[in-house]
Length: 239
Image (cartoon, rainbow, N blue to C red):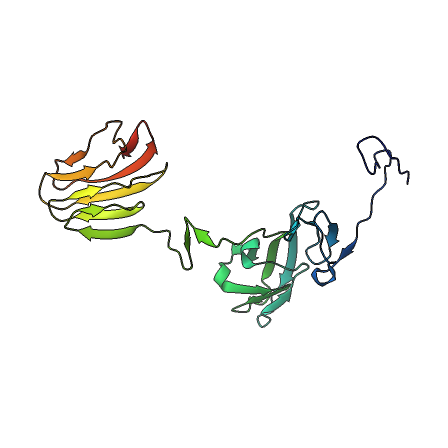
C-alpha cells in the first residue's frame, strides 16, 4: 500500500485500490474514547465513531432482507433464524403463505417462538430486515414525557376558558373561548357548540381568524368545526 503526504492532508491513500483495515471488536472492547475515533463493531456489524459524547453508527453497511424457511411438525414451536433480530417489527412471518400477526410469535435473539406449533407439513417463511440500527429512542412528544397520549384532550366547558392546542372543547353555555397566544403552524382546536345559544365568542388573542383581525361569534348554536393555525396572515382557519 502506498502512503503519500500531500498538501492539506495528513494521510492520502487515494492512489490505492485495495482497502484500509480498521480496528474491530465488541461493545465491551471499545477503547477509552476520544472524539474522532472510528472502528468496526462486531456486535452490530457496522462502522461506528465517537463524537465526543457517545459512540454512534456512521454507515458503511446497508439493511438487507434475509429469508429463512422451515417445515412444521405439529409440535415444534421454536425455530432458529440465521440472523439475530432487533425486534418483531423487523420480521414478516408466513405459515403456508398466510401472514402471521406479531402476537402469534415472539423473538429473542435468533430464536423465533410461536405461541402455537405450526401444523405438520406446513411451510414456514420468515423474512427479516437485517443490519438495522436503532439510532434513538423517543423520550418525549411535543414536550411531554412519560406515558404520553397523542389523542386529543376533551373538555366540557360552561365558563370562559383559555384554550389549549390539540384539545376538543364542548361548549354548554354562553361563554368566551380564548385561543392560544403563541400558536404555531399545525396547532388545532376542535369545537362542538352545544350551548343552544348563538352568542358564544372565540377570542382571537392576537392572531387572525380566517385572515381577519376580529373575534369569531358562533351564530349557530349546534355547530361543530375545527380551527387549524396556518400562518400570521391567515391565522386560524376553519376546516
